[in-house]
Structure formats: C-alpha cells, structure tokens
Length: 413
Ligand code: HEM
Image 1 (tube, rainbow, N blue to C red):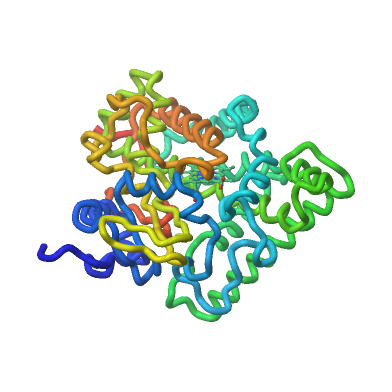
Image 2 (cartoon, protein in one colour):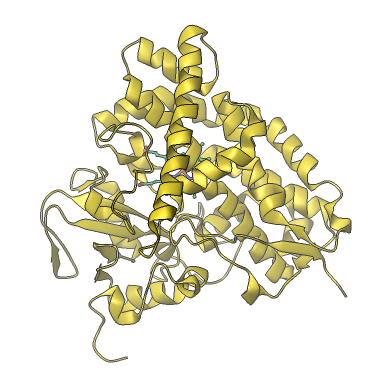
C-alpha cells in the first residue's frame, strides 16, 4: 500500500456491500493503522477508529453533540419517512444533549438499574428454556429465529406492557425502522416502508391513549404518568416508547447470534464455558468487545477540533467505530483473540458506548445474552455450524451487524 488513504472510498469500503458487512475488521485495522481519521463520502462523515479518539468523542458531549442532522443519515432516500415515528424534531434521549438528555433519561433510569431489571431474570430464563428445549435432536436449528430474535422482542414488549404475541408484527415494524434503505431502492420500496412506519406509529399511539384512560404500572404507563406530571410532552412519550422498542431488539439479537457463531467455530472456547460456568459473565463482556452488535455511533461537532492534524469543522459529523476501538492493539493485547480471561479487569470494551449516553438497557442485554447462551450450552453437548461459515448470510445493515440465519447442530464426529 502506498500513500495513506484519505477517504474510505480509497480502501474500497462500501457500507452496503455484503462482503464488507460480513468481514469489516480488515477495513477497521487498515484505517486504525494508516488513516485514523478519514472522510467517508457515503456517510458524509469523518470516521474515527482508534480507541483513544472514540473515547474522547464519547466523553466530551459538549463538543460532540448527539442531536442528529439529516446530513448524517446514511442511505437516506428522498420521500422516505424518518424511522422515528414521533413528529419531526421530537427529541429522544439517544439523539438529545443536556439538559433534554438528562430529563428524558431520568424518567426511565430507575427501571433499568440492575436491582429492578434483575427481577426479570427468571422470566427471561423461562423464555430461553421454552424456545431451546429439545432442539439439539434436530438436523439443524436456526439460532436467530429460534431464540435470538424472539427473546428480546418478547421481553421488551412485556416490559412496555404490549402483548408479546405481536412479536412477528413488531419485528416487521422494527426492521422497517432500522434497516437502512439502499440508495438503489425503488419508489415502491419507499412506499412499503413508509406504510409500515405509519402502522407502527398508529399502533403505539393507541397503546399510549389507552393508558391515559386507565393507568398501568408497565413502562408505557410510567411514561404516560411522567407526562401527567409535566416531565415529558405527548410527542416525547411516543418517541421514548419507539426508542425502547428499537434500541433493545436487533442489538441483543445480534450479540446473541455473534456469540453463538464464535462458540460454534471455536470449539475449545465452547468447551471452556461448559467446564467453567463461572466464566459466563466475563464471556459476555468479551463477546461485546470481540464481536459486539453496534459497530458505530455518530456525533455532530459543535466547534472546530483536530484529530491527528486533521481539522474537523463545526457542523460536520464524526462516526466513532466502537467495534474497531474494541480491537485496538494499543489497548487490548491480542485483540483478535477471544479470551474469556483477559488480564485487564474489568474489560474496557465500549460495546455499550460510554459516558452520559451509555446504553440504558445494558443490564437487560447482559441478562438476556447470558440466559440464551446458558440455555444453548445446556441443551447441546457440543454445537457446530450446520453450514460452512462463509455461507452465513448477514443482515443488510453495516451498523447493527449480525447473521440473518445461523443454523447449528450437535457436532458430527
Ligand atoms: C447487546 C445489546 C445492546 C447493545 C450492544 C447496545 C448498544 C448501545 C450503545 C452503543 C449505545 C450508545 C449510543 C450512543 O452513544 O450514541 C446505546 C444506547 C442506548 N441503548 Fe442500548 N444496546 C443494547 C441493548 C439495549 C437494550 C436491551 C435496550 C433497552 C431495552 C437499550 C436501550 C438503549 C437506550 C435507551 C439508549 C440511549 C441512551 C442514552 O442516549 O442516554 N439498549 N446502546
């Protein structure tokens, strides 16, 4: 390789390319070493890949704003409704700065602390047992459809107070909301997606209205009560329900699937977890580092800043690649190795982000992932992939990255 790349286009990175989605780490390694700050025309953003730079951005929420501009949306087609179902401009905590961020987060903070969310553990284990029991006898069991998708949808629906039988419908709505629409999408694709977003909004609005008439103790009920006390407005309630449904689904699905894929292809790691069940918690942290499910997040720069001699102007966007930072050899020894006993304790990964926007659902996601892995390790003596690893299809989403289909079976000798 000659001169250092100055754009992601120079290294052939296309975020809609299936091969790049399946194997992004070689791009990250190249950028991290040769071009730690680089422009992406496709994302219309600066891309940062080193741990130190990513941390700097996440920890300085005044210089790096979370309020999203239209410019920052990758693959935004004209005529496409925003994935956010609340009226345009309504803040949710993920896309808000202080003081709005604090106000919006405080309402839900207590519901997601370990002691409160921990009460869901036995329910989560029951869902896993029910979905996984008996599957080891099959020729092939799809982990995605079997447990990784239904578990988080069921749990978040129950937390919100929505019938979990609607799981399949939710999945359609949530896919429509989070999957980027490719630049070559047709007008029909755009219309179909808009129709799903409208359906989703109407459904959530009805559930909120019901609680105005008859208060409930579930999360929607608590948000409606906060509205009654003047802490949120009507649109912010809808926006918060929407955010919880979207933020907690695909992310957890992909973490579970990515972890199972790693265990299926690294039998010695699978054996280690069976022999040492006490390693399950550090293992979940290591999966978040090694193959976490959110590749990046983004911010808008509020005043000129410099990274490695490159000035980034106020108003420009930066993408911070968490998945690359988590494999930065400056911070993690043998970063491409899965190691449940990493010498650095606690694991310094930033798979859940960092600082004021650190994942609200992190304790829930950990309980769900742990329970799903335990159930699968208990059900199978030793599982392997039922198709070659190279044939695993990925969802068409560079950011929320994970397999669309992950068939496993008892290892054949
Ligand atoms: C493995 C699963 C998950 C991963 C990897 C993940 C990752 C993340 C990351 C990286 C952020 C920070 C984004 C930023 O700074 O811009 C975030 C924020 C957030 N996550 Fe998660 N998440 C997961 C599961 C969940 C679950 C289960 C829920 C809720 C039910 C949830 C709710 C949220 C919310 C509400 C925020 C916004 C917090 C704020 O802005 O203050 N997440 N998540």
